[in-house]
Image 1 (cartoon, rainbow, N blue to C red):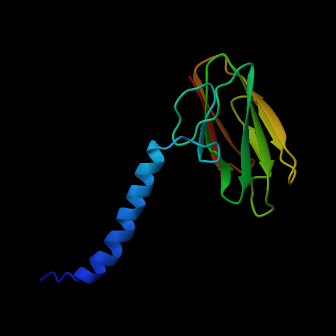
Image 2 (image 1 turned 90 degrees about the vertical axis):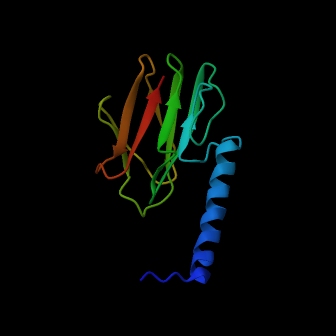
Length: 142
């Protein structure tokens, strides 16, 4: 026989409902560049968007013990995009960034920005990762 302790359900249900309400509000709120996804070129991103690119957009990517933030970047086809990686912690294996498809691998010195120009001449998804391949991210060009 299944016994249900309604007090425990109430304790668990209320925080879950609060989390759902917060996530729903975040989906409807204007996006910010500090989230896990960013958009360049005016395309709607989930959950963050950067201002539309003119001649070239620079998107800041923080690198720390949690990997890359944002880990997904959206770019407009044919527009220049620069990703500016800044490693903010020594507590990470992400001391390099590697774009295997582009043959680009760069060291990420602590607290020093490293710019990487990403070609956006064709619609595709480009992957990037730390030097060990443990943290991954992507640039979606559309």
